[in-house]
Image (tube, rainbow, N blue to C red; front, top):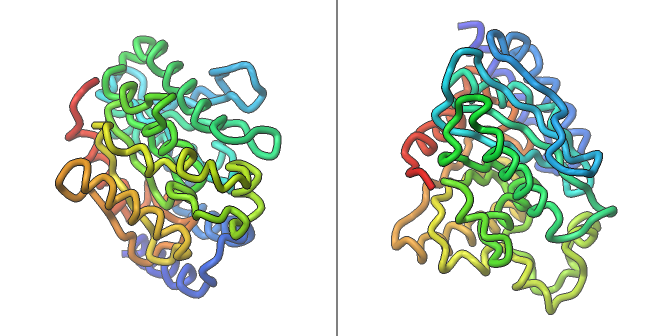
Length: 292
């Protein structure tokens, strides 16, 4: 009962915040969840800051339960507005999947303005290659890798999955994309925020090429989508555009969730709490995937 009441208080606090992408609300949201996650990784072994590439940001953490043989691998790509973000905030998410028989990996990637499109997607590809090469070390099934991205991380994951030069759809069993910032770029890049311009550029002639939604046709990779009820509209509409493209591709609607009571920052924080809507949806999706 007390756990449920705490969750209820969190939802009330989230509803009281403005609908905003201001980083101060990311900090405030994470602070709300911290008391619920103190024991989130009990029984889980964490291996941190493993290099998957040459850059200082090419680091990942691996979460597993000793003595188990994971049935799949989940690679989490965190958000951060293309210019920030860190895997260290999401160890509880890696542990959540590890305790459910899935090897959990959280990754960092290079940031703007040092890099630009498609470097984030290339980093996801490098992390996937690392997971494939090292799956046997953990007794994990390398044929069932799922990429899970949130916010800017979801944009990188979508580019990885659908870009015709990266061919990520052929490398993984599925993708989970939550509140992606830029699956579908606007025709006029001058109206976008500076962080979007820093990563995707300002050349309107490149909008279609750099929008993941443009490349859905011809792929087959299964994808699950989600948005938060309190996401800004500019994050919801790209998800709906991607859902439409996937529906046309598959002749059926993809798994699509509206996370009631959540703001933009809270869905990844909820893993390991009594609010298991997104977590259980992810597990159902992963368990239903075919191998590649």
